[in-house]
Image (cartoon, rainbow, N blue to C red; front, side, top):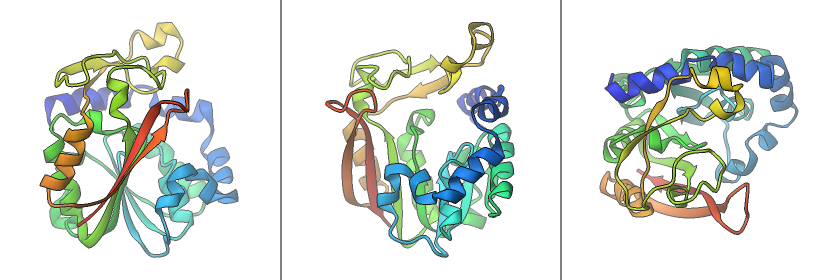
Length: 249
């Protein structure tokens, strides 16, 4: 496992299960997902025409907030994530929702391609994950290897505009849009903890990309780019906050 992945794993296994359960117990989360799985997918639902028997790799799928609704809609879902705490919460929620998901705890860059190579119909990621990986071409090559021929990658992430302005209120530092620096920052939900706990939480190591770096990586790794959508920030609908790339193998 890469040094930065080791550090990120420590951060994502520090009180993560307690955070998820304090916010919503697995049974509470499952009940909401079962009531309306399409609603639980939020705007990502528009990228899925049909989920029945579709094999989906949910990359850095965290606590299963998108994987479980997809499973409820009939998909065969595998989460790949670095955190045992996330796995515990996701599997408890899936059990409460009466669905099965596969959950592999690993560095995404080390996914077993002998087992999962050319296996998935869809590779799906959302919620801002690219900055956890310091070589985007290496990351995209792994995504490409997981997909069947004609498979689809759906990559939703934080808009690169957030490099120069903390528009999403994530409390991460601003920098030059063209910066290639690796920087240390808090994990995503650290800001919701009391200061005494927050100050003790391990940090993550991030690398943020430009739009051109992301698009060129998708193309150079062999994908056919189908769509690049931009979405407004949840804090200000006049500014870009997220984007979605749709590409095929």
